[in-house]
Image 1 (tube, rainbow, N blue to C red):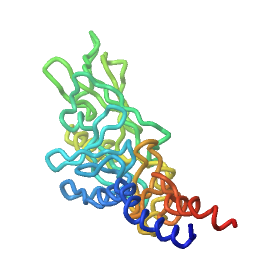
Image 2: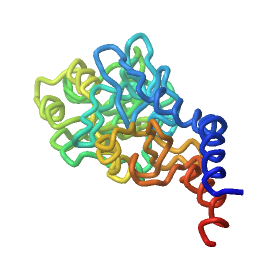
Image 3: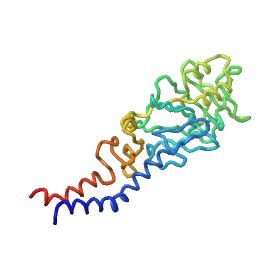
Image 4: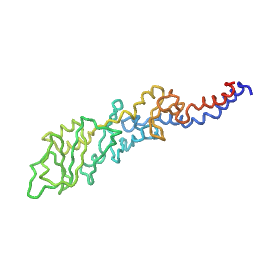
Amino acid sequence: MHPYFLLFTTTIFILIYIPGSFCQDDERYRSCGEEFRCGSMDIIYPFWGGRQPEYCGHPSFEIKCESNIPKIAIESTSYEVININAPNRIVTLARDDLLSSICLDNPKNASFDLNTFSYVSSDLNITLYFHCTVRPGLQLPPSPPNRFNCDSNMFGIYTLINVPFDLSLVTCEEEIIARVNQTSAVALASPTASVDALTRAIAGGFSVNWTAGIDSKCQQCRTSGGRCGSNPDSGDFACHCVNGTHSNDCYDGQNQAGGNLLSTITHNLLRPFVSR
């Protein structure tokens, strides 16, 4: 058989049968082009949600839009997303349960996967004590600013740097550690602070950085014309392109759904003739 005839038939085969193998990848590229806006916030990689599939972001960064409020669940704790600063890899969060009520019935400490997030150093810890009562025979100072009432019999207390409290005066059943930003911490340290200041501090949120390894390849992907996302099988970074899904960018030649399929087929079919 003449090699040029084989080349012609191979080309026809590729044009007719092979494109279907890339439909899945093209669909990823199109799907990740869907805009996701929640309230006034544009949600971008590494976050994802709405009509976007999971592979359009990092698997752990799903945002759900509830009544136009962006929310994210991290280690089983729900947070309201206050702000996303993508260039600096900072997301500002507020605990959903504390936003609903400062008096929690079953308070739990929140945790973060430190391989994914790290706390912003300028924010401060605040300790919240719940279900507190005065010890028998003792008395609290008049109107302590860091006390908040929850019901007629029990109250809560908060402490942080420069806002102490003599805990020997009380018995508290529960305590958790939360985070507040520095501006809120200054307001809480005021001798005229009130429960409103505490509520505003919680609503102001705190910030965490996500690790650089999550999106370090994203700019390279975008420059090549791709859309940042993840591999749906491994969760690793992926660059979704019009010609398929790649590990780094649209020019790296590593199509995760089959490699350089077209060139491989052509090379193997023509090899017996070229080697003659």
